Image (tube, rainbow, N blue to C red):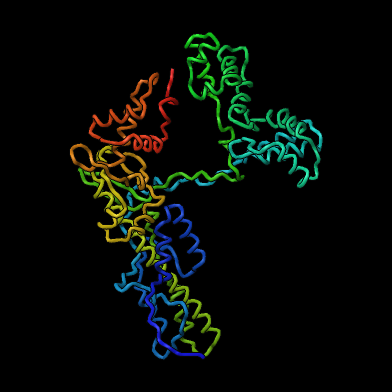
Length: 487
């Protein structure tokens, strides 16, 4: 039996404007430019204002739309339902940008490139090879990864050729085509099945009469494990050579590339995205001044032409076609006003966040010394700005700042804290900097172990466990002591 009853439910919903604002906040400058261009193309009621233009208040649209004696047209898209309680003005002019914006105007973003697959395929078609062997070679090239390695088993490739290409062949034939055709292509080392083979293919292209090259090839072929483990004394004893001879051979090996496909992309278009700073931070007379890159602060306005068209159509309440046209224009005008509001709020959020970060890390921006970085987490900035932690996270995501000391990735300014022997809280970034300095000054013949690093940092006032040293070392991409050994 059906029953009627009242139910009280508490829920939380995000308004469309809030969702759009969150998406805009996390875009870096390049993505924001693309998003702005897309919006300008899709909404003809939104346009970039000229310098001498002055934006009227949006309330005039309501007056134009609901003149005396004009029937009100209800729309499903009305931003007035979603704006915040404290309605901001919709003036789009902003002075929160850098005076040196011209230096960001000539960024080259797209360049024509060539994939490794295309480069190798062009070469293999110039080789005198049978039709079926050519198909096998092309298939092998298609199975190379972006580093130029053939990671798949030959047996699997033989099976694939039978099922997908209708080519029935043998493992020996595929290996022969790989070694005598594919691996002979440029760049040297392509088609290798491992690092050792890759380096050998490259060293064999060099002049074998050179003593250092010959020794390097011999080491790579027969003493690869000892080389990777840096057991140099074992190699010296094996070949009965002087230390200088081994140094020369190692110099030749260091010139080889472990990733010969690294200069190519998997797509035919290579995107060379240069960093476009989202913020500009200047230091004048001991004061740190944060600003937005002007590309984050465009001057937008609602189209005057569309306002006039809306006024014209809204006066004719008897024509259904004019009502539909007025409805469409009203939707576009509301969307334009909504978007301008979102852009203004984005600018305000970005500026407040960078201002809080600059206030927190003032000493760092003045000195440029990472040791002066204070421990700072997202919550610290959220407490200063009053924004939610998730909002701060979106702001700093993929954002960069142009500072007097170079381009800085905002996320690099955040770090946890540890307490030193004096009871002061220090940034983990500061500890990593000290760790890096200690390792850079070590005796490369006898690199410092993690236990030795613990002792040294403890003498400097940082009481850190060995496992923490190992974690920081890995985060800094510093290998273990054995692999840092040099002659």
